[in-house]
Image (cartoon, rainbow, N blue to C red; front, side, top):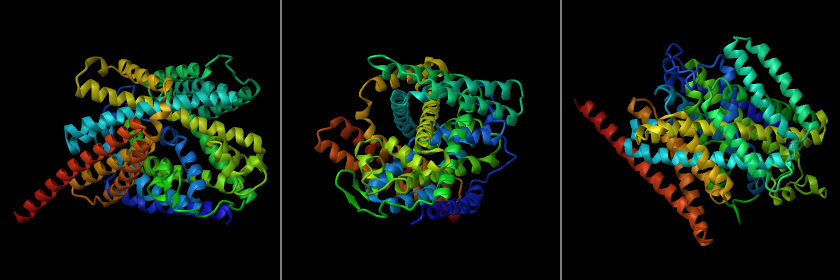
Length: 551
């Protein structure tokens, strides 16, 4: 099958459902363009700051949610189960699960003074659920900070030409934030100036690669990245975090646009099988494992944390929620389709050319390199395979770094809400000490053997999404509105993640990996507890409705 047909199929579906299903969600949640958002009602010049334009906030939001997951998940899944099942899950998952999750969590936070979903849990499920869920979120986010700092540091070592552009982008962001918010400069002209500087940084990076001649260079890069994350967390959001993510989004959107232009110019046929098998010896069955592996390409709990963490505190008007929440997820789904086509059409399934053989490249464990090679082949008519491959690596690195700094800031919010306010530990009410706690814990994991804990993160991330959807569904039910748009996806994700965690837990115990087995068991107990508390609330709501009907 021609790859352009697949791309067109995905694009048309995403556009249609954005218009019609997005409109339904707006009516369901009663979006009101005249209602003041927390960015105005709680403006503090640090976290609660209305974005000057929805496109700036979209850039921040999309850059934060679109980590390496929506690219690497499909790359892995297609090789194991085939491109057909992966494509269907990306499209349907983005439309009915991921998009609803991102949209609903953003509205829920905006309607609750920009609080994180961990804090909102108390209002819906009670104080015990809030403590348990918030602790779980805190550990999950600090793990994200640890892993992404380690992954980025490794990329700096393997691709030294991306070091200068990465760090110059921070300076570029500070310039943009200063021009827009302190000097009231035109957004258009400030963007043009900073994108020109960004282009120069890429040229300089290619000419002057940075190589650290140290015994363990990765540790120094991790330390530098954690220090950057600290400043990104405590500085006013509109001076560094928001403008850096906004400028990064141009790298990401350029990669997306160039990739699809490459497909249009080359019209490559898909070489990978449509369907391979339901069960894979080492990776497990198509359901639930493919759904967990694709992760952010269809739905991700981390998106709900971004929506209720940084985005809800900056959105200037509720009318922009559909564009940023639902539209952001569908854009990420379109990115995942591109990743799927890069490896299934850009590479070969059976080929004597070792550097272009998809299964052989995957056997080496270099998932980023596999995607980058396929992307280079897709865009080779535009600027050659090698430059295309380098640009793909820069694109992924931009995704990872934006997720890193946003995760640090959200971790700080949860630290302040949980340890500072709920547990009343006064030092952690302060944004400086709260961020330092996050950095210390993340650094401990990053410098240690973080890889041991990482295998369960995929399922735990999806479990967070299930819980957030459950919260949103209960909230709608309490407000006497149709809750099926959230409850049905929540049930699907609960069944998927619980089954995946059970399979993983049993395998870990068989392999005597007791740490991973115990973590999986704890996550299962957490999910059962949250569901049980939710069922109690549900039964109370139903009883109250019956009482009113009798009266």
